[in-house]
Image 1 (cartoon, rainbow, N blue to C red):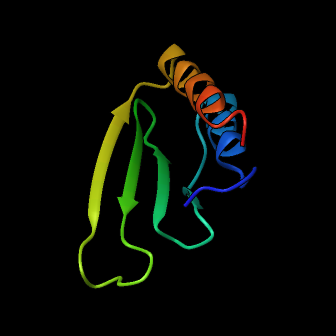
Image 2: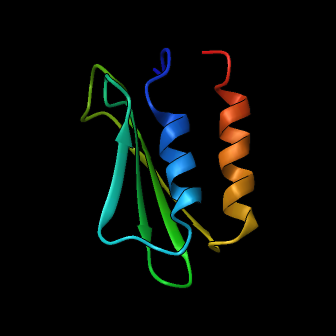
Length: 89
């Protein structure tokens, strides 16, 4: 569960700020680890991996989604949307 300002806005703002690239994998997750996000910049694309799992029973199910976006205004738009979505936390 996402509560308060847990850094998700800063995470996406940082990706947008560093759109030209970064080394390694950037990670963010909730306090209870039920939602985790990994971001990799591959030069021409940014790969975002979202992993959702139940907080109490980690072996029951896991959902993983990969989202590939170009490092352009799409990334800025995503960061703005995340900021608006979680702006009142």
